[in-house]
Length: 165
Image 1 (tube, one colour):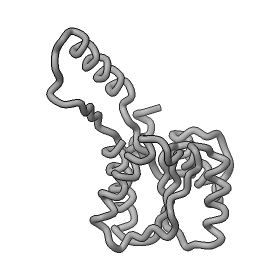
Image 2 (spheres, helix red, strand yellow; image 1 turned 180 degrees about the vertical axis):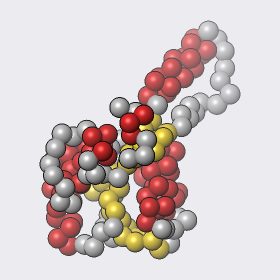
Image 3 (tube, one colour; image 1 turned 135 degrees about the vertical axis):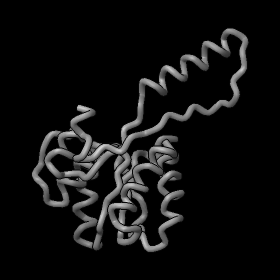
């Protein structure tokens, strides 16, 4: 999740030219997914002093409607150039609030019709199989080189979304 956060925020920084105002929608603050993604965001933001978080990240609990409502209130109070979301459902809600047409909460569909710019896809199959392999190694009495499994993430936008549908 740290790497996925870094991937996502680096793409946002590139799209904004390393400057402008952003806001972040998160999942529940009590989950490691949320805190790890935020860590990745912060790692990249440290390299871009002209990118400003104009408001503290909002916990939208992975919920499309809550994200939409949050962004609607933000847009009446802040000048935002990008809203970074920790899942596709919240990104669709943010896109809906920004004035795009409402639709099905599907990230790839939202990329195709322009409601969101892109998403980061993590390889859940690779993460699961790597975890199973590690468990089997340990159950067989073996040891691991480390206890961290890292799976790359992929930035998906209009240029490659068809490859992932």
